[in-house]
Length: 342
Image 1 (spheres, helix red, strand yellow):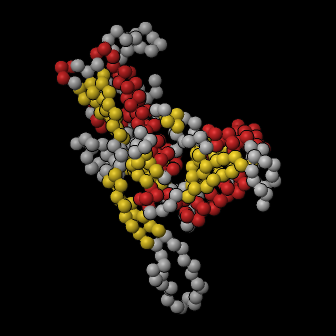
Image 2 (image 1 turned 90 degrees about the vertical axis):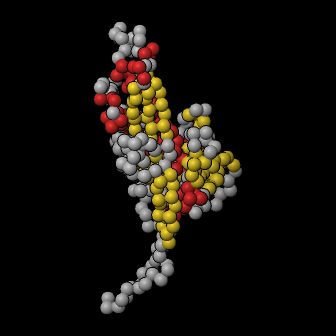
Image 3 (image 1 turned 135 degrees about the horizontal axis):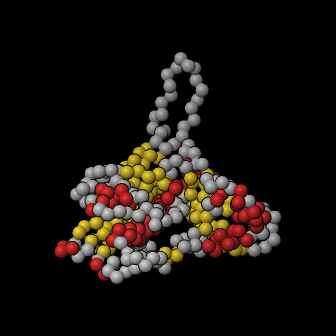
């Protein structure tokens, strides 16, 4: 088993935290977009700068420089609190007594059972953190129930959410409103980013949206070409993440977690990819051993139960996932309809 933990180093939170961070992560689409930052506090002060670019007149080199005179950036500060995501389990004698190890006739070991339990705890927290990152990509971060709003980033940053209705033609037309809508989303994002460069653009989409896009006759040829060339893309090539059309990579999110779809069927959430567009802050655990230290993405500990009756296990994470340019995010809703050529 990869990354198996060994006794007796499991007893200290420091050793166990180091080990839990080495255990393999579940595959995640969005984590790579987020810059990971360790912080020593559970409250994050965000300086929100509403920048305005100013054109500068050419002038004689002997003259003093022009004054901004209030035309530059304005700044406000918002304080956000990191989430607290703890999950616990217990290791009891019946978890190991008379239990055969997987694929062997030998009894299971304490270390392997602890490893399995910790990995299960970490996987649940990993998916929860990915759900928070999905919220940051959409602009609204929800709690696990999918209804309680933890942070509305549009409200926090004082901006409005951009929405586009994308009509897929049900009639024959040479005009391509699909590509036109995509270009509108890109232009909106580029405008709202100001001078911040985007390396590329992506959208995470529901299953029906993805099918509508990839099977439409105006797009099908481009999709077939992408599918035929997938084997030639390198491991680090962004085109492996999803179908690229209109210089936007469309990534299908068909997962259902706890009975909830990650993205609604006919919705897409468009976002720019670039340095510091998305950030995840990791705060310390709520233990005396970790107070005021720089945070890790995951923490784990194991405490001995009285009279040798087993161990109490805990894994936790304390993340805050944010998009620093929510005004550049675009919610796209797909529908069929007749389109008049323009």
